[in-house]
Length: 236
Image (cartoon, rainbow, N blue to C red; front, top):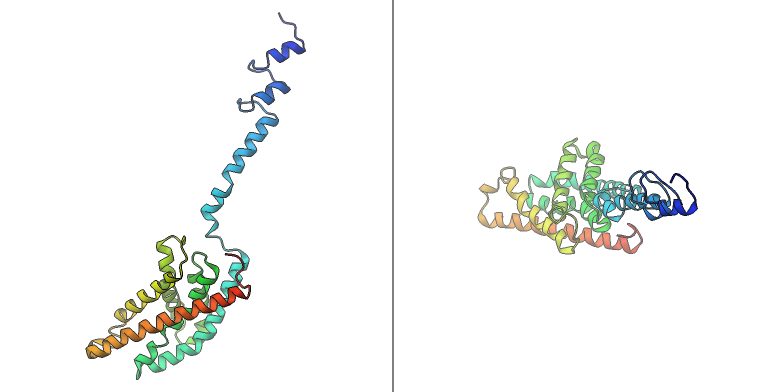
């Protein structure tokens, strides 16, 4: 029969093409239907797509304004420290290379402070880059200072990169220090004419570099911990 009434509408709520309050509520997932149930499902799905799992994917690589400002401050402070040390190392490296290498660990200091304090991916490299840029007009080496600072900063970042920045143990900082203390003398072998030195002096050169890098790293950790206790850096 072609007649309709309230009961008929209720009984035929599931018939394709028919919509009413009961049908909308009971079949929220039916294609083409809209209503409070369907809206809830769409909202739920959108929430799933933008929920914590999606945030975790790229959240660690975001740099909020507070982080950027902290990195900028650390980079400038590092440049203020390294500007005179750069000239001192240059003067000492010729006649007294061992004293020059005793200052090497200071080039790790700004990046170690940043990584220890902020515990964010790439902040060590960012601080090294900023320090190098600030040093350009003062170092006497121009933009080579940028490459130098980023090179040293890369070794502070490397151990954390290998674990995808998921672990921030204190000993990881020292891994980077030991690696760079071994790599740098090898790369600078010809520059310092280490091949012409007796074996004992070669060993002393490596030992001096190692002690300096470990000492600079320890100092960076100490400074970062003091800054955190003072409220700098916020929550991890």
